[in-house]
Image (cartoon, rainbow, N blue to C red):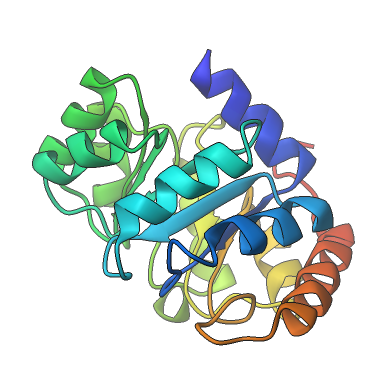
Length: 213
């Protein structure tokens, strides 16, 4: 079951690699570097060049990883991600139609929310996890407040401005994982630097303590 696979992947590494700007040509090498470092969940935002081709390339290169798309805004995009082999639908916002389309396609739905009201509505619609976005506007104190009222099993994933320097404070507040973007990958970053940054971020997860422990 995909939800179980997601839980296992998040337990193995509570970091989702956000590969905004990735190209299909570099996708296999970038994917393998991240997999070797310990990442198990990879996201290609749809405002990247040829995102569906990059998703397909990652799926071929990393058959055991969970691969999906970010910045998914409508049901047609959900279907295209599915056709490319993607398993995850991640959005910057809460759109119930995107969640419904993802679940109908047998995919995981992770909408973006910024308030408890949106979080409860997204979970009621079938969201598998909650992307707290942008995390620059959602402090650890706010995450702690949300954790106090949301269902215990809800998965909270802050995204936006997350780095090795601030993961610990969010984890202490109740975050279950993080989306990591520019502090990990940016277009044109040398592979050697990507390896170092990936290794540093994986090492920083030692600070991470799941909220349900």
